[in-house]
Image (cartoon, rainbow, N blue to C red):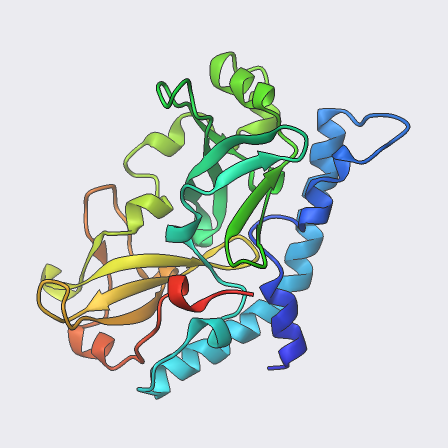
Length: 278
């Protein structure tokens, strides 16, 4: 892998480059319509995916090889640059350049191939009461890591957009990626997978999910799983492909075909929270 390629990946995150995500706020002779803004963001998102996917896949292939052939600690900052902690992302404020905070990221809905189909935004409500949960298309939100290491989520959506989507559905087709389907227990989301138990053959417990690692091109790539130990003490954290874990519904354990011994044979992985940063 070339270091330059990895550095490029580390600057990308989930949706579109932040510069693209806020172009509607720059001075223009004619203000674009919501449909034009979305079309521009969707095009930018597609271009990003095409440009970043090949490099990311090479990074993932190298990461898989390291974790399966070594027993040395794997530090995610260097082994998987660009990965974003799902645990860290939940609760991140969502900001509009003109208005400031308009909500926060409450969850991410995962669809086919574990891609992010929607980013669920909490609009805050009044004094925290009556928070609406609005599933927003990923192309309308850009996530990036600041120099201080913290994640920042930026959008062109205004507080009015979110309020109207929550109350009247006026922006349903432009903002919401799905209606209330994301609330069904059988829908796979980041918050439902983090903390879930993992079972292997014969439904024998093998570990617990501690975090999900999201790729720069909008996919849940790896689940960090704590294996072994007693009452969480002495457990070894390993990385499994999210696609290899079967999710049935909220509250039910995830299923893997790997045994405890196979999981323990993987290299120990340091968590994103302590390892990833720019």
